[in-house]
Length: 396
Image 1 (cartoon, rainbow, N blue to C red):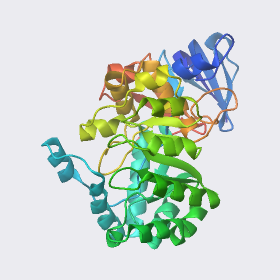
Image 2: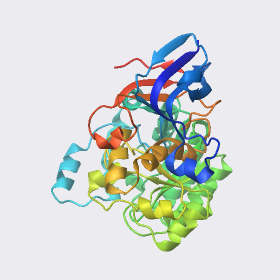
Image 3: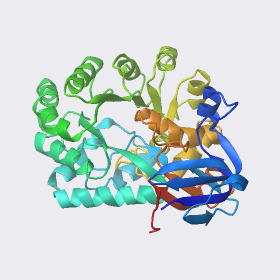
């Protein structure tokens, strides 16, 4: 059944039209006013002026509200058990964040049943969908044994095709005195068990986690197993993560909180996306990434939630957009592009994150006349309706 959404006050398509250059489309998002869109058979069938809209089986009157592509969340850790609210409270009282806190989630995740892990994952995915996230990536990394990492990616694969093997999150507790042995496990039996369920391989390249040579070894092994690389890079301080990501041809370098000039140059001269996670800085009180400098240098930027129980327990992309605008000096259009088309680029996807003809019919209608309300009214629910693959998502 075809659906016509008409009387759209502002339609963000992220699709370049006549007279719109590629850079303008990437930076600001192609915009139509007094517009309409037709969804048919799971894809966008027509886009244009409301006055010229073709007939459809069903008509939805947007009544002047804004319509956007569904958000694409390219960085999330949703397979876990337990919670770390006490750690957050201590951090707000002055305790510094470190990579080591991950181990408390590892203990809880190992002890949880498959049903509990799947239930928590599906609950968070539904929470995200209600807030407009129609495509999500999901990492493992809280099991750190062959069996627990394998079940993590298998459970994630039931919810999304964008599954990332992150055995190299931190060194497993039982290998603290033998990090080389754990690296061999990550590159060997653990990778073999996880690769059939994953699309991506990731590594936390950071002090307290894995160094540059270790990260290169993990990514090379993953690539040999058919997985594509991405990297947790430069979150806690200056380091080699971004350079490792670019050298490896990674789809994204994620966090990018502490960047040198050479890091920015490397990103600008490569297809590697800088995925920024402003919710992490909000939750850890670290400095925010310098999105303005990245954008002005020509780097492709994505925004993601990094939903996880430790450093950022939010599933709200609108919240992350508001932070990006307020704290990272992005324009409202840049932030929306980064949360839609930017996230798609970080997943090397072109069928989502945009509403050109032929794109997957993932659509958000706001309860507001403009995309700017996502930052203009922070903390206020703005998602009036969501269509995923052309189907209206029931409201919770």
